Image (cartoon, rainbow, N blue to C red; front, side, top):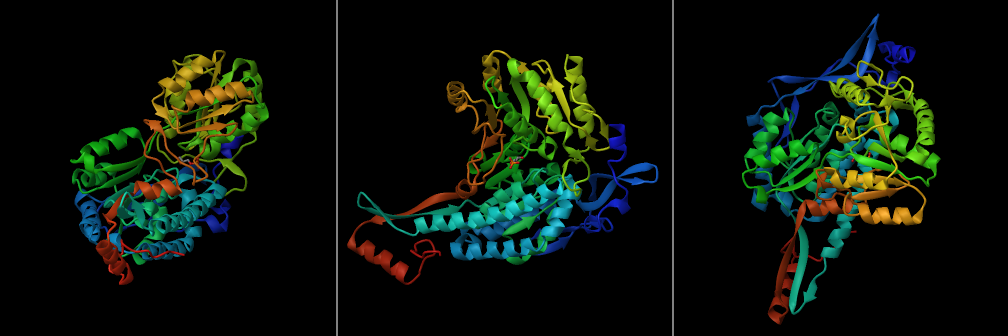
Length: 539
Ligand code: G3H
């Protein structure tokens, strides 16, 4: 392990040409009211999870800096969004859907041009491997395309009138107002855009604050945002949440709060809003998804899924399997196979081919994981895999912890990192109780092939979590499926289709089905005197 760690971080000249960095990027731009403004105040230092060898030393790479806007400056972005929305009278919220779609298509074309730049920064800023960074970028573009198609579909269905009990009506989805969109550092592009794009396309105006890591990678998109949307429709701010976002929420001018992060931060921010009943929230929060391995099981498949479920992107996914309950009859074989698979995962730098384990972006994370391991060990667990828990700088080699029990911190805390706690069980009720008593309710995985047991567990858990995965790891995709959670894990449901609904409200125009009214409505439509009352069909 020592040899592995010694050779983990490269020297600058060993980085492939394509992925080398230039000088540190001093990023001072932010976007307000269609203008890229320059911030002359303090900056936050942006460091990479990657360290480089310099002679006999290893040093963390300095990537650059990003603006630390103050509350007043953040509020100018909010004011721009408020003004562009103009109490629902602005050009954007009143624009025909087909035109709004064109703006988003323009943005998408410009965004695609920045693929290489964004992918490179994804690797350097959050340590995501090349394959997954490319996947994140491409998946986000696909999400935008799917959103456009879903909106066309929705609009086509809204383009017809309905007649119910003598009342003629047209129902369309209208925007809600000003949306504040904030994403997480593990998917700084994808997760942010899965709220940002639906918010925009439905006619809301937006203030977007990038995640705490994965900040610089938004820079290549600022011009695309500026040029693709009318002024004030999308505003991009930077800075500490405490300083900036708190002020926005306390102003009471945010109508929709889209946030992916911890439930504590979400609750604290929501509480600042003076009129909570006027705030709609779409939240993706903490999770501690269990994987439950039953005694009758295809063990190879269970292990395969559990390894990627627990360790892809070093376990830094909200959907990661964060605790494994394995039946005593199969636990020995499970642990043995798990260790072999784990040993085959390649540690290295994000751009290296086939790399699976990479350095972690959060300062202090290695110490936190060390603390969880020490606590578990003190209470009777062992690290089973060779080198498990060894670390160097920002890199932490995954630790398979066994046997884990209720008294250990890792049994309860969301580790969000490369720690795999395995709890042996004999009585399935103990596992059921874990799920029932958990503060989280995002997803779980069941591994087994006995129909009676799986059938009954599906019923037991259907009211506990948002998704039950059978013989498969937990995951968000495909993005057309609902993504949500119960308890402290989420508020609202996202999917391509659901997000359009989250960021809008159904509005009905109704009249009695009488000759004069029919003639009136027909005239409005024929003369194109309304963009709401229209039978236009988007192709
Ligand atoms: O971090 C949470 C993400 O939504 C998980 O998405 O399951 O596709 O990795 P994923």
